[in-house]
Every structure is written in C-alpha cells, then in structure tokens.
Amino acid sequence: MTLIEDTRARLGAIGAWLPSAPLHPPPDVERAATRRLADAGYRSVWSGEGPGTREVFARFGDLLAAVPDVVLGTGIANALLRRGTTTYKGGATLAQAHPGRFVLGIGVGHAFQAAKLGEDYRPLDRMRAQLSEMDAVAAENPAPVPFPRVLAAVGPKMLALSRDHADGAHPFAQPVSHTPYAREILGPDKLLIPQQTVLLGTREDARETVRHRVAQSREHRVTAYLAGWKRLGYTDADIDGPSDRFVDDLVLWGDAPTIAKRLGEVLDAGADHVLLTPAAPTFESTVETLLELAAEVTR
Image 1 (cartoon, helix red, strand yellow):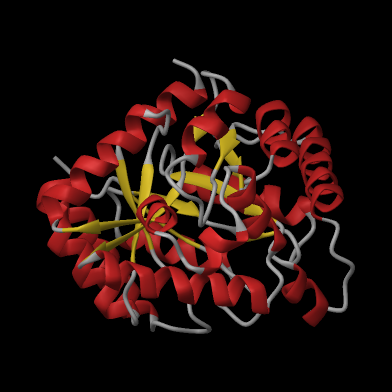
Image 2: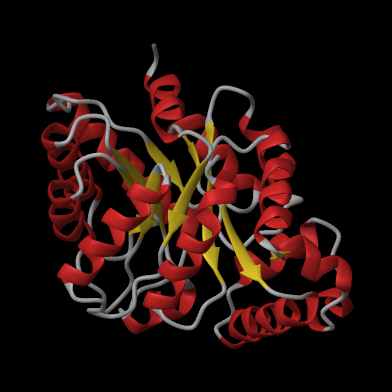
C-alpha cells in the first residue's frame, strides 16, 4: 500500500477543522475537545497557526500523545514562520513518534501576515523554496517513518505544485464547486482534503456568515480566496450580495441530515476527506456543534 493509499484509509471520509486563536484554548481544554471529537467518530482533527498562535509542532506533539487514536493534520503549518529544514524535521519527529497519525499541511499564509513579519509575499516562490529545502534535507536524512504533506492550494498553479511536488492539496474557504475543479488538476492519485464551513441554521444565517468572510477577505486583501471564487464563475455581485447560489455553495447549511447529504456530494465530487468547520463564535461552540453533527456526518 502506498503512502497516499494508507493515508486515505486512515482518514476515512470526515474530519474536524478547528480554528486556532492566539494562545487559546488552554492545552487541557484542547486535549479534552480532541478526545471528545475522536470518540464521536471524527477520524481526524486539524488546526493551524499564524502570527501569535502556539507553535504547531509542539502543540501537536502534546495532542498526539494525549489522544492516541486519531489522526492530526496541520491546517496549516505556516511557511512564513519557519524554514523548510525545520518544517521537515518537525514533521519527521511527529511521524516517527506517532506512526500513521500525522499529516503535514503546509501553507504560505496571507499578505497581511507577511506584512506583519516585514516580509515580501510571493506565495508560489515561498512554497517552492520550502518544498525544495524539505526535499534536500530528506535526501540526506530520510524520515524513519514517511508522512504525507499537502499544500494549502486554491488556484491552478498551487494545485499543480501540490500534484507535482507534494501528496495533494488542502483547500480552504472554497465553495463546494471547487472540489471537482481541484480534482481535475490533481488527478486521481493525489490527496484532496478540503475544509468546508457548515452551519446548523437557515440560508439567512448562512448569508451572514458569508458576508463576514467576504468582508474579512476584502479588508485583508486575501486575493487567493477572492480570485478563487471568481475563477469558479462568481461575479462581484454574487460575492458582495451575496447571492443565494454563492451562499449555498460556500456554506453547507440546514439540519444535520441535510448537511450530511451535501457532504456526500462533496465526497462524490472528488474529495478524499472533508474537514468540517462550524460557523460558530467560539472554540467551545465550534466543538459542541461538531458533536451535535457527529451522529449524522460520521456514519
């Protein structure tokens, strides 16, 4: 069995993606939440980092040791914060300590994050450099236990890089219609692990969630998301409205059975493993919503 085939089997269909606020929640709260999500049937739990958050490899070492029966994935380990050598060594250390239970998701963050660090923002160049440095270290010091790496990819060039120099892609904040688009570029033999926003509520509730995401994307000039939405055929009017079509494509809303049915559509469209993020205001309410959904979505 190849690394990708083994990863698909370990991940199953549905996982959870948790936001990481700066230095919050406390480690014991996050351990307990991860334990509850694993017990509820989620096959993986993902979270990431940005400027001001806890360092992701140290954090995941703690969680992998505390919850020994779930796969953890970084969504993402931020390439703005470390060299490729450090990224590779961190991933190899976790994979050796917890075989088969770690997926390395790597991303380049956003322009506003790079600006805070005083760096130029050239995402493709940064990602290529990160992967090249990782490959150079791996050639001299192969990881004792192989681990998959997936890239935070939305557009065609980053998806192609995911196909040619990684094990697949981990798209974020994209509509359901992005999944077949990404699968076509990746081909059948790479991992596709999209994050998907879900909401127990009405279309109007979902519309407010979309308005907030669009406002944030425009405020921080997150051009990858905006360009990605337009690439799929959405106009400025659809995005800023937002139109019913855009709302229904970006957020899976309704009751738990309805959300589960729509998740089936994402999997049928080419996703290997879908990561759910409830549109919830706090870490605690995010976890509670995931638990409420679990009986339907993790069958």
